[in-house]
Length: 80
View 1: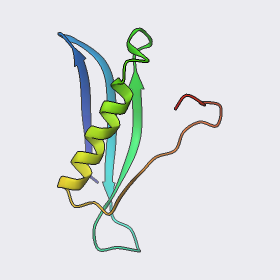
View 2: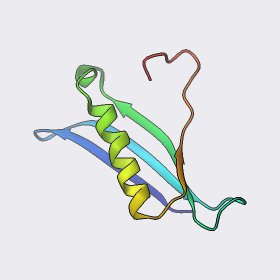
View 3: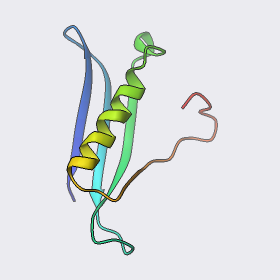
View 4: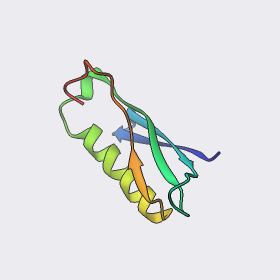
């Protein structure tokens, strides 16, 4: 199962990461893209880095011809 990771950098400091998993499904002939992890360091939050990482995932999924991107968030994580 292909797993990919992306990073967000400010200058030479890694401030955010995301991991995605591409997998088949029973409803389409193309793969799904599951956004498994998304993390932005506390000092860099509120600056659009999380949104930029999510947009990178959607761009990647489009290039991989995925039929959708999905993820889950903890119930108490209202900011996400």
